[in-house]
Image: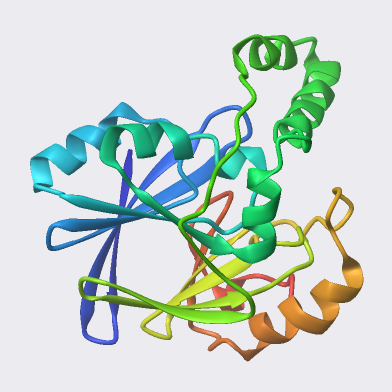
Length: 232
């Protein structure tokens, strides 16, 4: 588990990161008093130990979108902590629909990687994956505000990468973007549920409105400053 430290508008923010190894997706965790906010959970026993060490009593799961590598640990975390789940309404619909295979995109990526080097990532993933659905506790449509301890998030629907993608803005200067914005790679719009028109008309204007010194907490890769990327 990695630890990042930030000073944002007079607030000291510690962000813990766990990486979902198969496709290197980020789970970020913030602690405030006896509560925790977890973005895009994966399974990491260190997280449970962190909650125990810090006296965490309540856990809130915030989802940036519904692709499997960003929700693989939701049920696991709910089982261990009783966490609540918050996401955009279309994301919630995707997660609750058992007829939509949540693992397909990860399987496709792993299969391509195996073709490059002869690995067995796809077979290993296929053997361990179990179908599941997720019921969100709270959903929103276009915008919402969330308060957890000292943290106040403004969340904005940013479709394009997926129909239910969202960005969470903290103290005006930190944004958890999921896969809506990465540093090194342009947003992927070709996956099922992706939409170039939505990205250009809804997500991109939001990203372009952010301060250039805004801290971006992406779904993959290291945190970065907005002005460091050429992808918007």
